[in-house]
Amino acid sequence: MLTRHYPQKYFHRAVEAGGFLFLSGLTADDRSLDLKGQTAQVLDKLEALMKDLGSDPSKIVSATAYITQMEHKDLMNEAWLEFFPSGDLPVRATLGVASLGEGILVEVVCVAVR
View 1 (tube, rainbow, N blue to C red):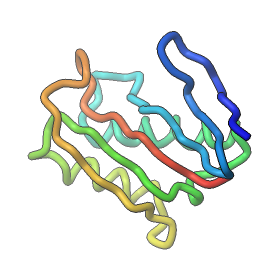
View 2 (cartoon, rainbow, N blue to C red):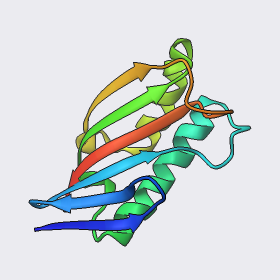
View 3 (tube, rainbow, N blue to C red):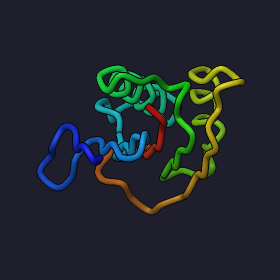
């Protein structure tokens, strides 16, 4: 069974299939924040979305982070480690990109179990 949640203009915010939740990329609303602040805001949005879907961040199995400032990756990591308990860290890839849009420093895409 496949269920699509929260339709947007070009995609769904989440798609559920086979017990997995595939979550679209999330970005911070406050683009004046630095990379750590934007990452923290993205993770808070992720937690709220997962709660709405009947899950929680401890069930994230894989995350991909896209950042525009690889030289500041340590700031993203600080927010990441403040959010995830060490026992709940998902696998993660971090990719440097030229642009994510005006003022956007980070976008995070996740796969989780229900």
